[in-house]
Length: 143
Ligand code: HEM
Image 1: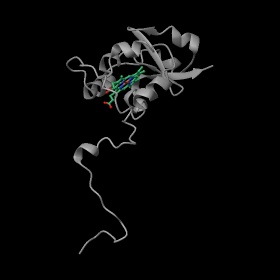
Image 2: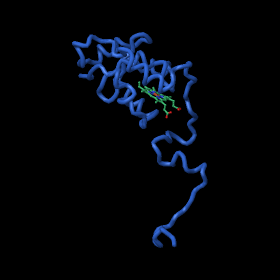
Image 3: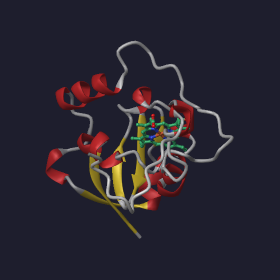
Image 4: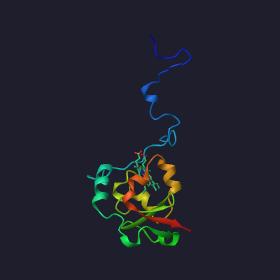
């Protein structure tokens, strides 16, 4: 006895057509090649999880946290050894994260000290930055 009601049409697609689905957020454009970089040893996502909990990745005075930061202050933190980024109105100190980023350090540094929300969403809106960077959160962007 069939479990599928007679008014439901079931069709199967070739495995190669099932992932990612054509309307998935992971399809950025049909002809875009991946831009992932080779990460250094011990710099996987799991290593980052372990590292961020074991180290003070915020690197700010705990008594002043969370802080309100304007664009002028944000822009001062645009270097490889002092790198802040604004995403979704929040500011993260991503200095420690740089070498763990699957898209590479260079692309992050181009947007260091800035509000990178739009470009972040362009590349990977499915990535949960709030979770990955939870230990890096230092404050809010104010105008
Ligand atoms: C600090 C905030 C960011 C976090 C937490 C983050 C996280 C990630 C993660 C988890 C991936 C792997 C995605 C996957 O495999 O599906 C990735 C890839 C990538 N990211 Fe980011 N990212 C950040 C910021 C940015 C920014 C600002 C840019 C661009 C300016 C960027 C560009 C890329 C690129 C090009 C890739 C490779 C995508 C591919 O597979 O082709 N990321 N990022």
